[in-house]
Image (cartoon, rainbow, N blue to C red; front, side, top):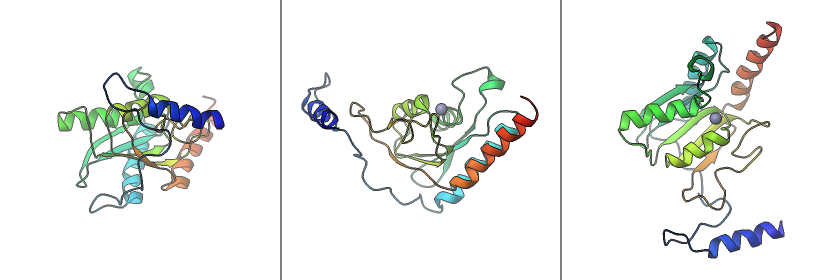
Length: 191
Ligand SMILES: [Zn+2]
């Protein structure tokens, strides 16, 4: 722990090649803002769960995501389709980022929030930072591969040059149940 603090101090005093001070470790994103106008987080999570249902209908692990803009418009949607697309990067979050990027004509989705049914993995936290998202809301925690809080604080690493506020646990039981039911069914089917 002591070493971590010293490491963070060292990072904070380092000079970046871009001439800006590197950010300090820890949660720099401040309080979680209220949901966008006309929405609440649970209702937005239901939209993401609806996307998860589409993944399940294709035999994919049911994870779904949506992206909502600061003014409350749903600008991106996606569901896990790695198997059907033969694409290891086709996670729900990535599909939603692609869909929102295409809708806005911009790979930077500043001030937008990603709402996803399962805690994002390492790859997706990286993409979230690249997209310059404002915030992340997720449902169920992923104790095996979650890279936001469970296995790694992937959005709060000291070297990152962009901070994303994040909040888990929205409609968590419902999100977890849809995954449990899917895996139970898969085991019964011997898949
Ligand atoms: Zn992922």
